[in-house]
Amino acid sequence: MEYDTYKYYLNDCFICEKILEKIYSIRKIPYKLTNTYENKLLLKKCMDFHLDKIKKFVQKSEPIEMIIPAFPVKSPNPQKTLSCHPDYAEVLALKKLHELCSCIKEIYPPGAKVTICSDGRVFCDIIPFIEENVASYSQEIIKIIQIEDFNNLSIFKLDNLFSHTEYSRIKDKFIKEFPDNVESLKKKRFYSPDFFVMFSGLNKFIFEDLSYIYKDKSKPWIRNEAKNLTFQIIQRSNTWSKLIEKYFPQALRLSIHPQSAIAKKIGVNLVDADDLWRTPWHSVCCWKDNHFFLTSKEHAELLGAHLERADERYPYYRL
Image (cartoon, rainbow, N blue to C red; front, side, top):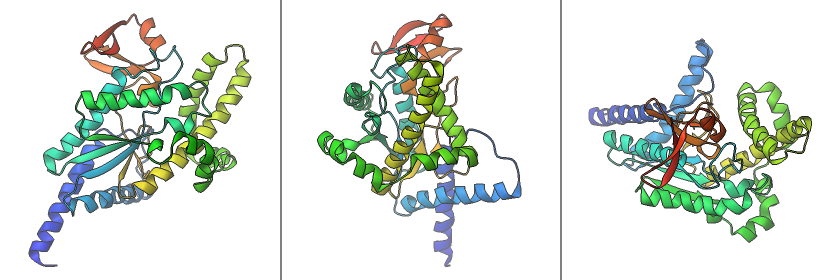
């Protein structure tokens, strides 16, 4: 390798590592790996996987492309959320993604961009009482991005691929295109620690929502229903992930949920929370001790928090 070529190669490698450091600075993982030789090799392999993706953009002097399935719809559970509308929790999460791109631009002038793959329509026929709110929630997220000038962000929805009528008609085909059998997921819970952690985290929130919706049902019935619904949601989520991977094959994959340190997706912490699996759309935002965190509406009110508005527009709680 000639000296100049080698020099540019080293510079590219340095920049790629610095970009990944920026992304890792907001990383969210469910547990730390033990410090074994095997795990060190796995961590190196995973880091190389992310660096290779970044390098393809750096070599072309193009913005780093990232995608994150997120912002589906606000939980209909009033014990968790203020309403079906986005609030300051969503604003802070969007701001964190926008600022991540701005931080990357400081060390890499082409910058970065995040495509938010809003996935509410993927779930609206299996999650009770959300269908009527999916479209309005998505439009309000787009409006926040425009008002706040989060110009590093864009939205990709199922509507970009299918109309509502088309999706209703070809839903089964959509799922079969990327099969992920529910029965195989049920088995996976027993042999994959990462899957078990994810299942448990999601199941907790789904159980809480169903407990509110089905007040007249027994706890065992709700627990069983929540378990089945969690598997269905994971199945749909995996299908949606594979579909967007098909449309954004070069993009770096981010996740709102914690991801193992050796996963191909990078879990990101957009707003601090009282639960690792809590998301802005299952929460309210609360200000305490000079920082914001996510919690349930019920918990915020139990703490004695009072409601305020940021910029006279976005509601949040303050202690």
